[in-house]
Length: 306
Image (cartoon, rainbow, N blue to C red; front, side):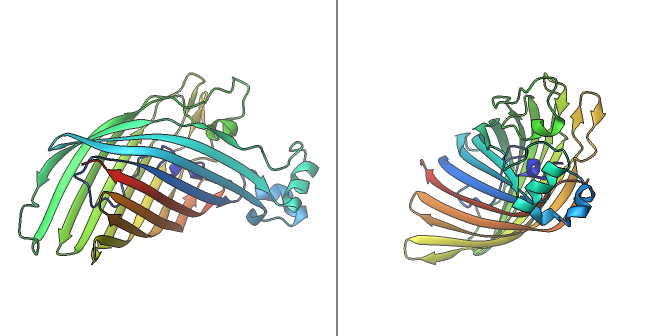
């Protein structure tokens, strides 16, 4: 997979986390920072340098304008417009080893940044059993699909290395999304279960990112303090990507799966909300060599329009 391509908002799949104000039109900014350790080079190439994956790093950040709109009571429209900032590098020891092994004049690479691929997603409410007494169990299910647009920079020319293509802000392809979200609540305890699947296509330079699956489950508790409401939450995320395709062949060091533990806190006051979450992998199965995910931080602010 090139691990960072699994992120919930690069966009490989959309972010469908905790959202107690699911029925309100809103707009917001979300920031995601992902840290990796390791390299796409086979570490055995540097065995005489006593290097490990800890001598190489990658960082991926996404700043995302996002929102949702309800044109009708049962139809939810979600949109996202991301800005990507990617960088990678090595310790002084790692840089020396790569130079000694003819991998070019290696220092920390210049960051790659730019507008990413936006997406739009529509959910239709299949059922809603929330008009019950607040002490009873209520739940609802939404499902639908959407489209990711090839607005981000991706063109590098036919001579570009496949790895360089995965670092670009955009993918160059029109991709299709299937999505569903199930929400439930018993008194002040609630839960979300979300799933999205991204069907990718080949871009104009013969490159295709692997299809991607995201599934997550979150449980939260509602705590009221004066006019403020807090939602501490925990959960688990699963992300899987098929191998990437480059001009007639699959990339051997792409594709895989990651399981994350999730802990977060959302804060609501009037029409404003703040969110913070930390996600830490507890299992990774990647087609090596690839950098491994170390941790991911997601934070954001949003405003309810009505």
